[in-house]
Structures are given as structure tokens and as C-alpha cells.
Amino acid sequence: MGRLVAVSNRVADPRNLAAGGLAVALGEALKATGGMWFGWSGKIVEAAQGGTPGEGELHIQQAGNVTLATVDLCREDHDAYYQGYSNGVLWPVFHYRIDLADFDSGYLNIYRRVNQLFARKLAPLLRPDDVIWIHDYHLIPLASELRAMGCGQRMGFFLHIPLPPPLILAAIPQHEWLMRALFAYDLVGFQSQLDLEHFSRYVQSEAQAEPMGEYRFRAFHRTVRAQAFPIGIDVDEFAALGQCEESRETYEMMRGQYSSRRLLLGIDRLDYSKGLPQRLKAVRTLMAQYPENRRSATLIQIAAPSRETVDAYADLRRELEGLSGAINGEYGELDWMPVRYIHRTTARRRLPGLCRACRVALVTPLRDGMNLVAKEFVAAQDPDDPGVLVLSRFAGAAEQLREALLVNPYDINATAQAIQQALHMPLAERQSRHQKLLERIRAQDVHWWRREYLRILGETDGGVGG
Ligand code: GDG
Image 1: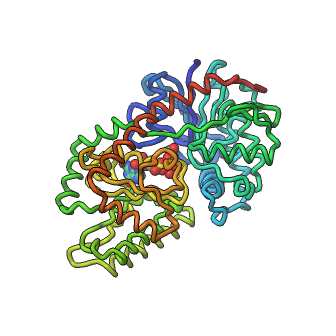
Image 2: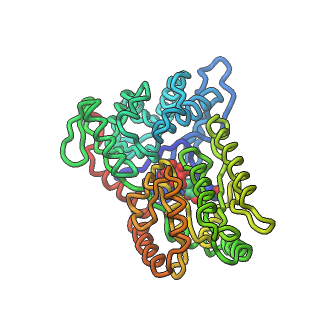
Image 3: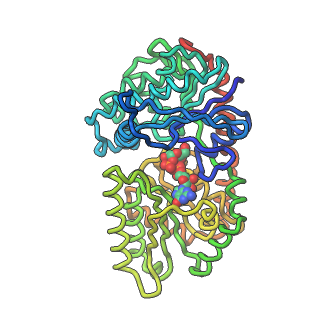
């Protein structure tokens, strides 16, 4: 297989990966094989005087055996491509929130323009036998732009967020253009079987695609392979992080402060897809219906700031502040509060210790591509005395993590009941559920995900008109 070229909105130095998820997975893949990582530099610059806005400068930097190639964006392009179309149209619709999408602001032209800019900057850097792996909803049309410039390399796409059912997708005025763009790839990867099923239904009903045996579809004069590759975590890395000083210190601090260990934990970006108001309401119901939890159970909710300039996120922040204040006001005591709500990012090195100190994780998104926090919580537990995972059936992770307590997060009473069950689960049951969950996250960890995706991409026919 040729050189790996990974493309994503943001790029990180693979020798120094602080963040979880995508960055770690790609960084690790690139370190193993060498290659190139291409994306936005993270820098916003003034539009060139008299030049085409968005003709960003290309930066090439060597990081060990990986070449980092990044492009600057001007303010207008960044705002319309990233905040506007990617996070103001695609993110809400793909998470089933048509009501939050801003369809008519003309963002699409700039989304397309930035994808064209990426293609123009990337194409001259490519070698004929490169294998190109493009990530996420910011870059759906990148392959078709590269193909239009004559690039015949093997190209794969991975969607980290859910793909909604055809009728929801069809609410996007340019849905056909977007889905047609997926046929410029050789392989399209999804997080779950359900996403794959939505893709299959969409292309058959809207694009008259012919299914051609397992995982293959033909439409728009191209054949594409589409398949589910559930992303995982590096289980050993996360568990090992639990041994670092900050992690141990966090564990001791939490255990010291809450010696009866009845902690509920939520770790999320502050995002409307994560079901945070519903989760707080479930904790309020828990306190109302099961009073034995008063003065004893506490929810530690970390809501890391995210996309703060998008209106829906600012509204959500206010709602969460109101709800947590109201619950604490109603049930709090001088020496105990039911909710500790923290609207800040917590250092990654503290997360395993925090997970281990908590009895129950509440991972209750209304919709989520996968959700890595669910897997990180399992990886961080003490197998002899593990905590319990309460998991939304609407997270992609629910297809794999069947031994979690699966809940419908819209059903506040049922979620409160599940939390109560988790808080009182006997040790033997906690151990047996945890053991199975750990096996599952080990069997399909992040290394498996990367190897399996690239193996299948390597098996596709590849190239233009395949
Ligand atoms: C997208 C999809 C899919 C969270 N708060 C803090 C923090 N985190 C870390 C977690 C985890 C990561 O961020 C979040 O990953 P998720 O998977 O939960 O969610 P998204 O950010 O929405 O990711 C998702 C994922 O892509 C991968 O394909 O699973 O469905 O939406 O690693 O631990 N990290 C630190 N401080 C925090 O406060 N350091």
C-alpha cells in the first residue's frame, strides 16, 4: 500500500497527542506508516489584499516521519465553512435537529470554496500511489473536487457523526449534491450498522443506486463500497494514563471528598446532541422519587466549552446553568449538593482517575455517532469494583456495548430508574457486565479501527471511474 495521506479539519503533531479520539487514531496510524496529515492550520488570517479571499498560505512542517501540511483560512471562509455550513447545517441535521439548522445563509458556496481550496493545495503534494483518508462532515466534497482535478488515487471517507434517515437528510436543500459527492470515494465508512442502513436506503430511494452484493453500491457512474467501522479507543493507553500522578491525585481527591462513593459522572462537550438538560432532569427525578439518594448521590457534570459563537450553544449553556442552579436550590444542603456543574475543560490526564472514582457514568446523548466517553469510562474502571455505565440507546456505542444499562434519554422517569438500578447494582453483576464491556472495547479498539478501515480501502478497486 502506498503512502497514507490523512485529511481532517484540524491537524495535530503525532509526536505530542494530548487530545483523545480522532487525533490519537490518525496520529498513531501515521506514525506507524509515515505519511502526510493535511488540514486547516487553526490560524485565521486577513483576506489577501486584492487576492481571492481564502487563498490561504500552505505550511509544511516535518514531525518525525510525518509531514504536516496545513492551510490558513480567512475569517469569512472560516466562519461560513466551519461555523456556518459544517456546524450550523450539517451537524444539526445529521443529529436529527432540523429545527436548529440555518439553511438559507449562503454558507454552502463557501463550504464548497474551502473544499476546493483544500483540493488545490493538496493535489500538487500527492504522489500517484498515495492512499487518501478523508475525515468527517467538514470535507464531504473533497474527493469530488480532487477527482475534478484529475486525482485518480484511492480515496476513503469516514463519517464520525451519525447519518440520519433519508427523509431527515432530504431536508438539506443540497442533499443530492452532498450524497453524490460520497460516490467520488472508493470507501465510505460509518460508525454503526444503523448509519450504513440509512445510507443504503437513501441511495436506493433517492439516487436509484443498485446494491451490488455486500457493501457495494453503484450510482452516478461510480461504484462505492460502504461499511460500518465503529471507532474505538486505545484501551491500554487510557488505563495507563490512570497511573499518572494527576490521575491518582484526582482519584484520591474525589474519594476523599465523597467517601461513600455515590458519584454520577458526565463528561461531554457542551453540545445539544449530548442530552444534557434531559440528564439533569433525570437526576432531579432521582432525588424526587428515590429520596435515599439525597445527601448521598452527586452528579459531577463536566461540560467542556464548544462552538460558543453558535447561538444554539449559548442558549443551551443558559439552560444548563438554570437547571443545575434550580436542582441545587431545591435539594442542596449546607454540606451536600446534588449537582456539580463545571463549564470548563478538564485536563485529559485527570479523566481516568475521575472515571474510576465514580460509581455510575451517565452517557445519555440524544444522538451520537459513537461516543468515546462511554468506552473511556469502561477502560478506567477497577475490574474488582467497577462502576456502571448508563448508556443512551441512541449513541452509536450502544450497538456494541450491550451490557451497559441502555436507556431512552427522552424518557426522564426511565432514566432516573436506570440510575437508581446502577447505584444499587450488586458487585457480582457489576463485575460481569464490566468484564464483557471491557472485552468488547478491546476487541474493536482504535488500532483495530484503523487497520480494518485501511485493509478494506486497500481491497477496493480504487481510482477514477472504478
Ligand atoms: C465526535 C462524534 C465520535 C470531553 N470533555 C473533555 C475531554 N473530552 C474528551 C473525551 C473524549 C472526547 O473528548 C469526546 O469524544 P466523543 O466521542 O464523546 O464526542 P465528540 O467530541 O462529539 O466526537 C462522536 C467521535 O467524534 C469519534 O469518532 O465518537 O460520536 O460526535 O475523548 O474524553 N477531554 C478533556 N477535557 C474535557 O473536559 N481533556
